Length: 209
Ligand code: GAR
Image (cartoon, rainbow, N blue to C red; front, top):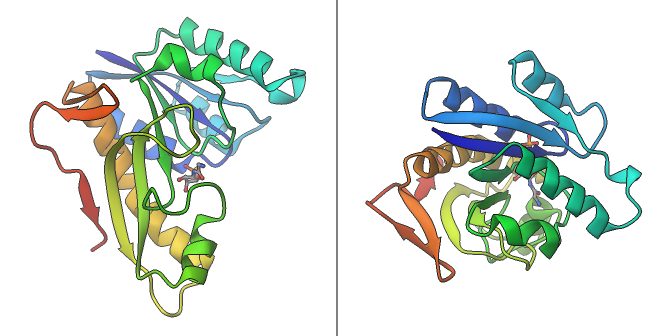
């Protein structure tokens, strides 16, 4: 059984998709869901599901590093095999990233390497791209860069605004992230020398219907 700790900042819909998938599986244990914000909607939901939850509020720490140290120790206390960033809207420093090398995963709402950072949907529309999507990747110290595990693509329609596009991408996020957690639980992929190695062929490209 693999132990996953999920970090969120608020809504937690990706976390919910992962938890719902994990419910049907006895090889996946969601050891904890952690938020850095008080009263996160996602944390309330996770608690209702009987999952261990924790709030570690960044406001209580004087520096980014001191917060990341406390977060690292909290996650280590749950003996996580994998740490899943699911809409965790904080930049993490080396102090956190280093101990979880090869075990720290993020989802980003764009087709990386395009549109790192914030407001990805809005920027995609401004650029006039015809395809957009999301990326699940291993986290390295550079923000939104890191070996890509899987991507989902969605069309961008003429009438889209950032909200309609975000909603379309989100439906795909809810497919691709649980799939990657499934692969990790089954040891089907790992990180070697900054490259993703797949033990057997798995779906890594998801396409909006
Ligand atoms: C998701 O769209 C996720 O890709 C994005 O935040 C949203 C969280 O939604 N993450 C980032 O922008 C990371 N920089 P959720 O809380 O409902 O899963």
